[in-house]
Length: 322
Image (tube, rainbow, N blue to C red):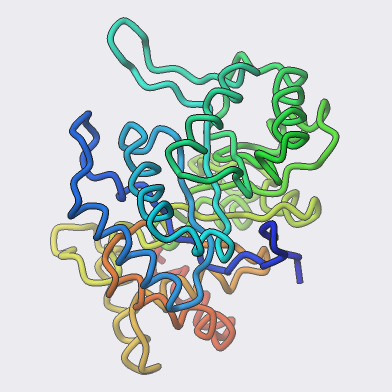
């Protein structure tokens, strides 16, 4: 089995990751409230209770407020940091005043972004830093210089990317000393392109797939940890009203419910278990602050281990509309 990333104390990452984008509340400049900080703490406690020790951030999430909320919690409870793996992302510039929305993998932007994240998170290092989305103006040598400085100073231990193809990864790695260890992509029963790209080879319908060709196979061969954002599909298969959704969504929600009842587990565990059954050892990033929904994910690994090939394909075929 692939070795999961370790934190500074040698503790391996959990198979599930808690995505912290909602921690900051609204996407505006309003200040954080004490209530929001308490909600953040409750979500983290629920995650730790079911064995989740990895937390995913980005410098842009709610204009930095998500990291700030998490950092307030760590300031009040600093002993928690040693048990965690903290991951953040950089490389996206938000439209602001006269500045356009943009991507930025320049050396200075990477270094400044990490300093901001460390300050907001109240920590002296990130365990993993991801480049958020591809920058057409990227220069691998600049990225390598920034990564080298960050690692030498102890401010970042591992590096990875998000939403990138094999070509992007190879291009960036051409100047790096260390290999990238993570690629975070949208995957799940609600976004099947990662499977469709594999099975639709030499099929007309394959032209409609929006996923980088060969990326799953490359990632497994290169020992890159695949993380999945949006794995619970915004609740479409776990209780959200889908009466107005297309038939495949409605039927998949019905099948997930049926399987959960038969297995005496939660719908969240079935949806995540399907994704974790894939031999790429995909690491789902669940994006919720609801403690009960977080706890509903606790059985995901067991459901993945127990899921038959036939049940995996039954869910896949239903979700794709066949």
